[in-house]
Length: 314
Ligand SMILES: Cc1cc2nc3c(=O)[nH]c(=O)nc-3n(C[C@H](O)[C@H](O)[C@H](O)COP(=O)(O)OP(=O)(O)OC[C@H]3O[C@@H](n4cnc5c(N)ncnc54)[C@H](O)[C@@H]3O)c2cc1C
Image 1 (cartoon, rainbow, N blue to C red):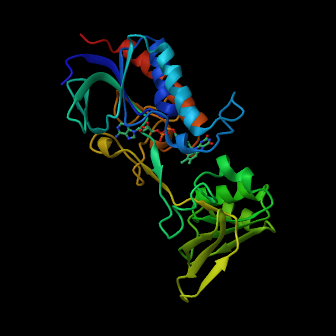
Image 2 (tube, rainbow, N blue to C red):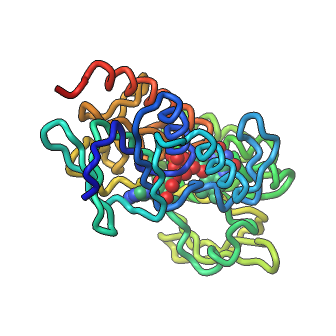
Image 3 (cartoon, rainbow, N blue to C red):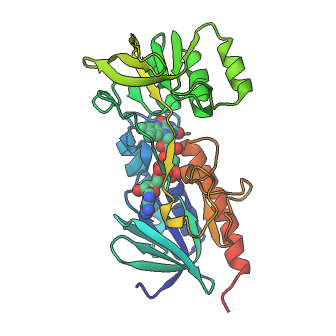
């Protein structure tokens, strides 16, 4: 056990965690930042083109820039512990304790959770081989690369339809496949999109194999009712099969929604427990983007700074 009681524990080193770290440093909140890895999900991206103020940056450089930004301001105020995975978070006598997989534990008066999420991967032959070669998990990031091409979207929830809507702006056609008979997305959204002449859907249909040579050339699909398979000649496969939020360590302490995301107040990023804030992809925020994660983190730190100032320890 580390004997110090910090003002703040930050869990996560993606855009939300690092934004939190920079703001905590500037407000001189004694902080410990615990992260498995610095950089976040888009560190693997070929190129990020929508990080505001930066025209284009490779994911790996994005991760380096986040690290450098925090290093420039951390001074003796923010301590960074990388390769630390938080496994439990508890609350006793107005102090929060985060315990990590290495057996260490850290105490603080407030907690900011920015543990993000993992994308549910497409689990069929070819999906891994062609990842970033036609198989993609982020339409706003990679969509423009598929200008005038035929693409498929896997997933019939709101995320699938939103992705299809974005892609229709520049692709030749979008075929959305959904494994069930009824779409999960809001009926109004479905109705609007189905009117688009380049939008096609296939229900009760599941992906079977991603085909390609250097890049994707097609997706084999199976109709679950008839058992019939067919190949869609597409250049892009956009997967929207859901997010898996990294919230296991918080499930005993905080209110989570049915998909295990942390329920937050969008005005100030407070969670169901006083003294704990959360932002980014681990929360019930609707949209998953670097700028949103960083912005919501700033909101959280502004709010928790005032909270800490008015909840002095006796
Ligand atoms: C391939 C890909 C490309 C993308 N490209 C773009 C893009 O171009 N533009 C864009 O705006 N968005 C993009 N996104 C989405 C964007 O990456 C996410 O919205 C964003 O990373 C969310 O930030 P976050 O800080 O909330 O979480 P994450 O980025 O998921 O970061 C989570 C952090 O928490 C750490 N962590 C997780 N669990 C624990 C734990 N138990 N203990 C300690 N640490 C933990 C992780 O190591 C990581 O540091 C992309 C996503 C993917 C998958």
